[in-house]
Every structure is written in C-alpha cells, then in structure tokens.
Image (cartoon, rainbow over all chains, first blue to last red; front, side, top):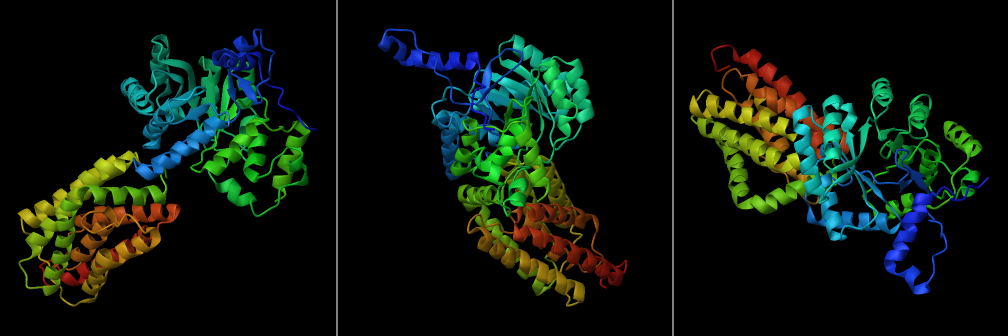
Length: 313
Length: 214
C-alpha cells in the first residue's frame, strides 16, 4: 500500500505559509492563504515540534576536500542541489578534517540559504577544550549558532554535555545530542538516553544494521528523543553489495528507482527515525537521495518484505 | 579514512604548486645523496644524513602539520614522529657523523639500491600514472622519503642502527595499509618496501659484525 506524504506537521505547514507570506503571495491575493501542504516528508523534533526533512546530508569524507578550489566548487553544486530539493539538516564534525570549512565555504557561496538545520559535534578528549572547538566550528560554518550540537561518539560526554548546556543558555546552540556509529557502545548510549535530557541521538541504522530496533529506537520514542540515522549505506558498501542484483518488483510501488532510494526509504520509514544523513560528493547522487523526501514510504508490511528480499540476496 | 585518494593527490599537487621553489632543490638533493652513496668513496655519511634529515623534517613540519592535518586528524601524530626521525638522522648522521654510507655490492646493499631507485623514480611514476596529478617526490612526500631512507641506510658500512629504521618502516606499514583501503597503488607498494628493508637490514647486520665493515 502506498503511503502518500501526509506526515507534514502543522508546524511544517506554518513554515511553508510563512514563506509564502514573506514572498507577499498572501497579500497579493488579499486573503488568508489556504493550507497548502508541504510536499516534503517532515518529521518533528519531539521536544519542540519543529519539523525537519527526513533526508539530511552527512559530510564525512565527502566534504573533506582540503581547500582544493576545484573540489570546493564541486561541493557548492552538491549543496545547491541539496537545498533545491528541500534539504535542511547538514551534519558534520571537527573530526572530519576540512569538512566544516568546506561547508562554510559552500554556505557562503550559496548566500546562506534558508532552511538550513546546522548540526555538528564536539570531539575532543579534553572537556575544557570543548567550548573552544564549538567556537571554531561556528566560525568555520559562518553561523551565529548551531541548531544541534552533539557529543561525537560519546567522547568525554559528561563534560561536553555540560558545555553544550552552557552554550544553549548563551543562545549559541538550540538542541543537544550525542552520537555513536558502527553500532558501537549501544549500552552506554542507552544509559545516556535514560539519564540525560537529550533532544537528539545519532546512531547507525540501515537495512542490515538493525540492532537499534530492539532497544534504542523504542527508547527514543518513549523518551521523546529525535533520531538521526548515520551510515545508511555503510558508506558505499551496501550499494556495491546490492547493485549487482535487481530491485524487487514491489520497489516500483514505493517509487524506489535505485538501490540508494530503496535503502533510504527503509530507514526513514521507521517511525522513530527523524532523518537519515547520506553523504555524497556528486550532484546526481544528491538528487537521487533527495527524491526520497517527497515519494511514498513503505508501511510495516512492506518494510518486512524489504528486509526479507535483501536477506535473500 | 576521512579522505579520498582524489583529495590526497590534490593536496600534494597544491603543496608542490605553492612551495615548489623550496621543494625543487630538496628533491634534487635526494638524487645527489643517492649518487654520493653509490660512488662509495666514503665521507658522504654526513651530507647524506643531512639531506635525509631535511626531508623528514620537511615532510613532518610542512606536509603533515601544515597540509595533511587539514584532512586527517592523525596527521599531527605522524608529523611528530617524522620530526623525531629527522632529528635522529641529524644528530646521529649529520652532527656526530656516525653513518658511514657506501655501496659495497653485497646483497642487502643491492636491495637497498633497488629501494632507493624505486623511491626516486618508480614510486612517483606509479603515482602519476594512477592520479595524473599530485606528484609525490622523495625528500618532500612521506612515502618516497621513507623508502629512500631505508634504501640508503642499507648502504651502511657497519651495523645499521635499527632505531633509525623504526619510523620509516612504521610509516611504510601505516601508509601501505591506508593505501590498501583507499586504493592508492604507490602506497600499497610501501608494504613490500618495509618487508624488503627489514629482511635486508637483519641480514646486513648479521654479516656486518659489531665493528663495522662486514
């Protein structure tokens, strides 16, 4: 059964209408505008109800271009395609080499497009160095505040959560999160989720790495924590693994034309997942990923069929 | 790895493009160092060690700290080790003159000669054929500098100080494994360089005896 994009919340429609109003459209018609639904799949951040698109953008490796002018110019086009397709969340980290600097460059080149949901991380053993790193990240991105600041891989998380709390009070951060990847440290993540006032967690979740379904995703739903799914393709490994095989016939019902879309639709159709953050350095792949933002998503039965199909490959 | 081969090659190309007036003489000196050792007349240990030391310090300070650190968080650690190796070569070879290098025609030295020629000519060629950009030269880039150092140290007239092999061999292994993951052929070859160098060095030292000539 197809599931049309009906998940746009009232907040999402509000933002869409605010955009129209800003363009003067409502005034031009001299009447209150009808509630035109945002065609994008949006998911709420439980703590506030603010919504973000279900597909964001990771930047590990792909935006670490080391200041090369040609590669930077390429990444500007990737980010242009991201925003043109209704993208919002960009996720990075000081651990990703020059990625934050490249993102800042691209945002500047694009005139700091609206709709950005800026997410980065703090990544240092030293609790005392956390604030300085956050300051540097803001400078590299060229933003006055981050929407989301996460503790990278739970590194020195006690100290950094306190620093993030102080940054929030100072108005330099809006949401707090912690991250893991590769399925590691789930026990510790679970404890942090139970005991700390988190807005977001980031973890690895994809069609083969589904351990989070057992405890972490239900816990996130119960505790009202937004979930960012990283490593949706295990970098490129899942694409390479599945590409020799045809997509199942039912993929057409989901408008999944490629394996990347098939895999992303599986991830973001989990009700506890807020968004997935595939990374790419190519415009055509960005468009392919972002098409998921507006197409149908699988229901529970279709999700089971997806898992069964790839298990048989 | 947090970067791609494309970015790595671009980084080397940018380094050469920005610093070639400084880099070119150093690269030429590495060739002169090899010729001096092949000539084997003795008395070249000190200048050859100075050239190698300069290469390690350059690769540590300029490449690792200034360039590689922008794309790889581990680069400062690597850079620190390169500086240590540069200082060791400068202290033991250039300052105290404890490296007597000269080609003697024995099997380990032939192996060293092959490694040195590989570092100076084949590695950059393989790299260029793979990337078409970002030429990595001995004396400037870490990989060929490590291979050249191993090749020249195998020309020692006497036991090779094994502590001088530690960082070059370790780098060849690290870069080789990284090359395997990224698909950088020239760096993968450094695994073979490390293996050949270790076997040749141990054989050389067994034959050299404690006093020197071997």
